[in-house]
Length: 364
Image: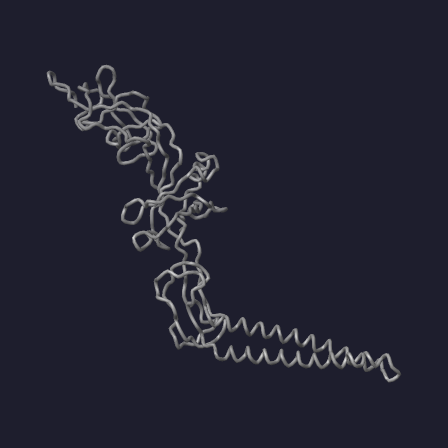
């Protein structure tokens, strides 16, 4: 629509496109995973006497969780100890016999055959003692298995069995423990994006930082580092799995990150890069793509196609289509038509990037 003769040019607020430090970032749907997970099973068969933990609480490594019936295993240990003692007594007698036959060899009454028999008997008893001691050690191990202890620090789940039930290795998992601090954040990334991240970071994982957006939309107050990139591509999605480790300390009696939790991983550069930035409100879009209105030296509005880089609700970085210092319309943009003369001025609200960096937020 052409401007009517005599009508005053519409007043618009403009701001100069300027280069700003922009922290490149991308967002991915992610899962929280415990760094360690243990499924406890019974290693001996016995009746369960006691469950010694509270479900859903945190336990320490070495805490006693289950106690199985110990009577039969203690009796077995005592029987094996008696057998070892018996063989040791027999060995003592065999050694005395061997000593006597050895002394007799120095006299006319000594016989080599008797000495050889006594020596063989001594060696046989030594071997029997070794076997009995091995059986005793196995019995003691089985007795120890009647006390099931936490192998790691972590949060314990629900018990699958209660006291009075008969358990064995075939019973399956009695309870699971998942570690709490730190936690992994795991997310798939398109292969092409992984290559771009590697170029941006120079192949150094320390050049990237991971932030987490919690399910309620808030940003978690701890950051993590990328520590793993999978060695293969998932064929049906053409993605690679990335993983970072994030601290998960106790806060206010609980922890913010939970194993299996669905979150958003924000992967961003540690060091910002210099990029041309404009207020996000200046960017419009139609079927052909993104554009802005630029005011030229004659105060005429020009529709300019632009290619966006990283953007946030406040600011957008411009890859192409604008030059540093050009005046971009921010206020009154709805009244502007291409080629129309306008009356530029400062924006109604001072639009300036916050101190520091302008952070991107492209979602994957």
